[in-house]
Length: 64
Image (cartoon, rainbow, N blue to C red):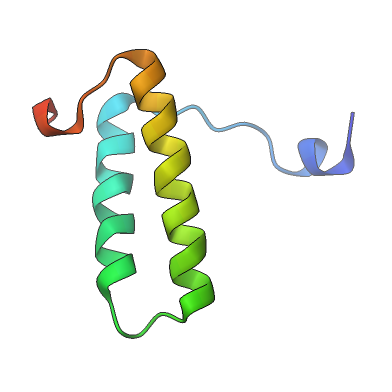
């Protein structure tokens, strides 16, 4: 097992929690206070969450 996996255990999130995270990341990408590098990381996270949600059959516009 790699050191990274031992230090940071997986953190399963419910779909509603992922939806909130997506909204926060979307807002962060639009803020001027973040660097381009930080916005890039937020965008990558959003893309990973979107791919996961698509595999699970989730649609963000249907989640409240």
